[in-house]
Amino acid sequence: MTIEENFVFPVYINVNVLNRIRLLCKNFPNEIFGYLIGHILKWNDIFYVKIEELLFLLGAIHSDKFSTSQIEGAAGKYDKKFQRLKRKRKDDSLRIVGWWHSHPGFGCFLSTTDVKTQEYFFPESYQVALVVDPVKDDSQFYTLDKNSEKGYKEISFAVVNLNSN
Ligand SMILES: [Zn+2]
Image: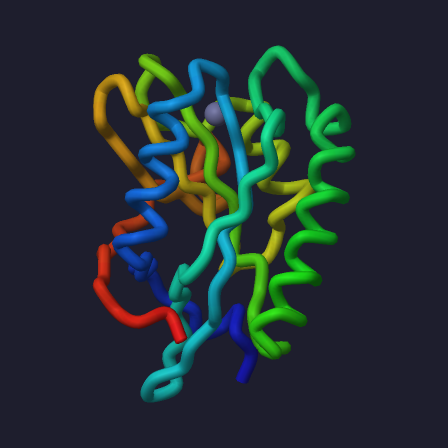
């Protein structure tokens, strides 16, 4: 049985992680982006995603003004940060479970560039995109969906207050 065959949403995200992302998005006028780190967990043969950490680099901006190739430099640095985090937590099962970015004032959705970013950098079935609009105080999770005209779909999420370890 593979993860792909038995993967379900919702996504579970630690309340501290979501609050920190919301605060970062509020504090930066630009469209910033970072990584979502967590585990794939299994319960009764069903897999789900638990988001436990976030990564953020100063100056990492994701915008429709840029192409996906222009965020590749930041992606490399994020991968190095992720390797360091795995070593620090001595946890080899940690995964990059997606990414987050801000849409200051223009609402939650995935743009064409966002869908391309998802397809190129986060193509796994368990990898999600979190969009935060700090002006409208809105947050939403998305995943790729080949059957949808837009190429993605909204997924439900639950905010949990659990010790991340
Ligand atoms: Zn976007």
